[in-house]
Image (cartoon, rainbow, N blue to C red; front, side):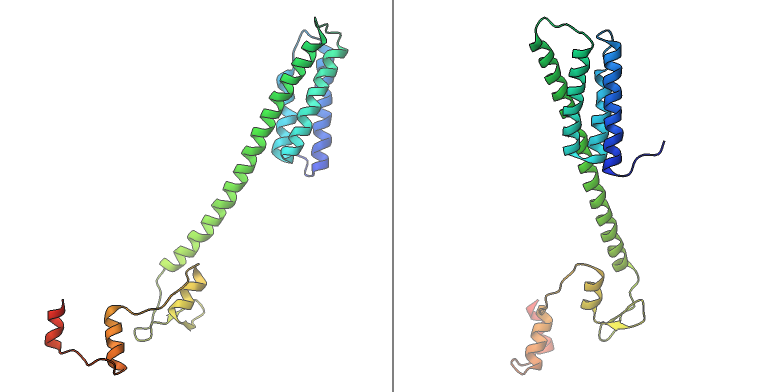
Length: 193
């Protein structure tokens, strides 16, 4: 059986199913109870059409059940019992519809997160690969053979952003090169550590 694709097609199919269940419920009278079968249109509406459709079909199925019960000649000691039974069914239909629409929404969100994680993992794997790097300037050769600064290469292959500063050794060396500090005596450098 091929599943319908549009909301209108789903709605028409589920309306037909709901009415068929109501006719079966009416035909069987109060001897057989088809209450649990009404879960099918409500569940399918929740799964394929969303929460609002599930609510519509929950109400519709409860009303169809009520009409089938009323038209079948089922006599209750008071009409309040017929209304009570209908309300109990409505609550059950709403619960199953709400649960399934929430489950579907959660599943879709998890699929999106999994796809995002697969994309990020692929980016990480690119960074874990063998990278040809210049021994002097530290530029990286990309897949096209062009040489790029390491920061640009890593930024283009990940969400990494860079902030520049000096390590203590380079800081001292920059001060000496700028003439702001005298070079240390190599013998005294060992005394610092």
